[in-house]
Length: 211
Image (cartoon, rainbow, N blue to C red; front, side):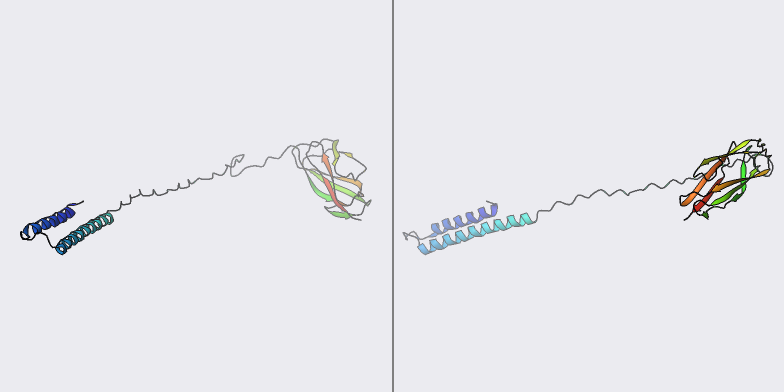
């Protein structure tokens, strides 16, 4: 019970005592209506005091300050790494010889075929006869000795001869080889490959056989 309620009850009791003391001595009893009125006023004052206390408690509860939100630390900025530039260095070209430019060094043994018959993808029927012609050129720096072998290597064998010896051929010289050949019976593209001994040259014949 708070101080306000205590003061109200104290005042009510004091008023009752005062009225009792001031009553005439000749009257043996007090007026019942007056007593009931004083009791009703006391009860009303008590109820008012309780209502006041309840209202003050509600007001105090509503005025309680809410906790303030804790400030979050600032989000650090995301820093992306920058791409490191790089430089592509082209390979250094090596030029042999002095002066204004380089010189081309020829291999010791090399060849070239400047004419070929039949030309690539010529059409024949199964069993057709034809000539194979290759013209070789010695493009190396060494002499091709006499007896250098030109041999059948792989693919359908279209010639009856499988090996042929060449004569001596000097650097820059040329020689034509002629061979009898027959188209195979299998249809489609047919490739016959030969090789020149020690010169790393691979002449070939490529034809198409159709029925």
